[in-house]
Length: 360
Image (cartoon, rainbow, N blue to C red; front, top):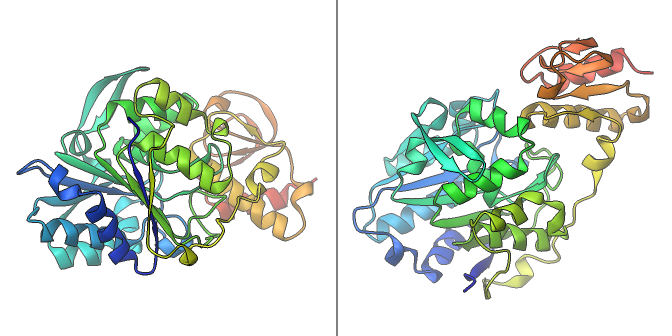
C-alpha cells in the first residue's frame, strides 16, 4: 500500500517541521534507544536562501520535536560535493549555531569510515554513520539539477558516499547508481525543503519561493510527487523509475495530506529550461556535478552579457581523459583539449574568463 505524503504550507519553517513530524506520528516509529541521524543537503557552502541548501530551521524543528518526545541521541551527518569543504558548508548554512544550541554532534562524512555494500549494480562504498543509523531522516531540497533535471530525496543520499564513490557515480552516468543507493541505504523518513529551491541549478543562486515542505517514508513517491509539483514529467528523471524497479519504493503516492494554509503556497513555479538551453552544444562526458554546475553558472553569466552564442566549443567530464579536443576543456579531466581550464573543479569565475578569452 502506498504511503501518505504530508504537504505543509509554510508560515514558520520550524513549526511546520514539527507539525509534519507530529502528524505522521514519527516519535512512535523510532525504536527505543535508536540513534537518529539527520542528513540535510549541504552540497555547497551557501545559505538556504540561495536555493541550494536545507534551511537550518528544519533541523532546529526536528531536533526540538525529537527532544520533546524523549529522543536524545541525535546527530547531523553530511558530506558536501567533490571540491567543497563540508565544514565550511556547515558554517555557511548556520548549522553550527543549531548544533551548539542543542549540544548535538555533526559528522563530516568525507572523513567517515565506509563499508562495501552489495547493490543492484554491484558493490558500493557507503559511509558507516549513514548505514548504522538507527533512524535516518533525509532532509533534501526540492530543486533543479543541470544533469538530472531535478533533485530531491533520492539524489540527496549521494552525500552519504566518500568522494571517490561520488566521482564513480558520474562515470556510471548517475541514474543507475542513484537508484541502487536508494535501494541499499535504509531511510526511515524524508522531510523535504521546498521553500525556495533553485529550479535550475543544484548549487543555487536563483531561489524561487514556493513556501512548501513535504514529508513521507517513501523516497520514490516523494520524488515523483516533487516532479508533479514542478511540472516535470517523471520519465525525464530516469533514476526515479529505476529506483522503483530496484525496490526502493513506488512512484504512486498514497493520500496527500495538506497541513496549513494553502494560500501561503500559491501556484508552484515552473522550471525555465535555462540549463537545457545553456548546455546545448557542450560535449559532456560523465562530468561531476560540481564541475558541470560551475560551467553552467559561467554560461549563465555569459548569457547575461548577451555573449552565450559566441562561446567556443566546450568539453567537460571524466570520459574526456586522453581524448583530443579542438576547443576549451573544463577541468583536469580534459587533459588533451587545445585550451584547458585547470581545477577539480575549476571555479565558475575561471571558466567564464577562459570562455571570454576564447570566444568565436
